[in-house]
Image 1 (tube, rainbow, N blue to C red):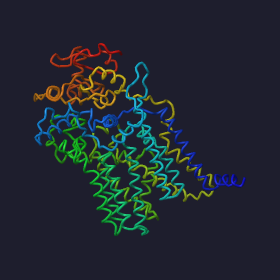
Image 2 (cartoon, rainbow, N blue to C red):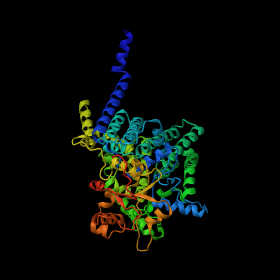
Image 3 (cartoon, one colour):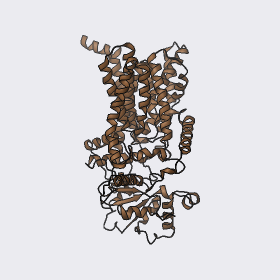
Image 4 (spheres, helix red, strand yellow):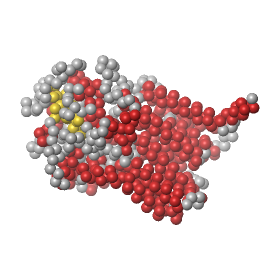
Length: 599
């Protein structure tokens, strides 16, 4: 009886209350997850998500880092490199043997590949069943939501260490109520993994700063922590190359605040970071002559000579046409957009406003003051990196894309914003506890307003059409042989859903200089057995895009084929399926391949 009373006491007023609170929090989080996935889950709509998923599947099947999404720019880089090293092979582009992936860092696809080995991924869409959710994408979303939960826990523990329990709970709740993070969690992007890596990096900085200030650790411990910091930086950069720019504020933090350990920490961290990153850079250079493959060309995109996806679709890019003014203009224009639109509503919550106000309030805690300096340096570095690295991906999927780097800082921004809120609350002198709780509840509800409105009716339809119709893609893929190649304006979707090698539509069929881009691929690299065009090509404005636009040759080709009800006589793909047109898609192939196949 006494033992039972002791247990009851622990759960009422003792340490057991924390277990109860934690259990309630976990149950509430799982309930919210179930509600969100039932009402708001959406299939992949970002090209990057499909790209990394199809690459992961190839890795899981023992094909290595080979991609079925082939960029013409990647063909150019591989051929140029193989020519430079005088490797005269029958297939310089490696299209027939498996084209190497030059767009994605390896960490996230490797993790997904491991997931695909363990879980029962089913890539075939059942016939005769109404399609809503694609099972592999749902499993990937659940994995990313688990990473989201890890991030929430890390923020809770970090805020409790730096502030107090009240700030910790509210920070965790505000992050949980962020609609932006829920959308990232089901997007299929590597963002949730990167947020968790960044928060682990913050923990390293906090431990090292406290140790040097309190003089509680020796040199060996600092070396070990520097190694761990370098590994986290390397893993982050191998998840998203632009994350590597954070090495600058990390080294600045060490130089400013680690006293006599600054040199050791800076040198060890940078060397470990370089060692982790170097093998992949060497691999890319051996294949393409560039350290980061096609991803390294992001700085050239969205400049005057190469708007949109023009550079990635170029077989023979002429980068010498870009001058310094184009780079400066890109930096100024994109930085201005970030400062005007993204920073004021960072994370989709007005808690960010409290963080910005708090920049003018000095902290009594030395640790908070120093961490805030690191956060501001990171904000500056990532703003420049995001501005210079912006490509068509940011326009194709606004906000929810891999080029949104500032979102990595949001959990820490929320913690500082909530800390500022409690500082203001203390100044209100609300001595009645229920009043403080009521005000805090209102603040949490307001900060989570976007998610609350998202969960209200009507329910979001999970399909990402237009333009993606997975059953339609899988149907024509079954008409193609596994080794055959398709050309498409959304090759990432053909590679992911159709499991067929797909090259991005070249800039031209034939241009004024008589450069036959399509035939350069079809005749000299690998035959194109199918052409698949969607609203991405067909929804252009008729006069300014299709008639006069330099990059809408395939839109004009499709319009000519549809209006004249026949395909140009010299084009090798003459057979089409009329039922695809009702969805706004055009599919052409070299024969009536659908004959003999069940629908």
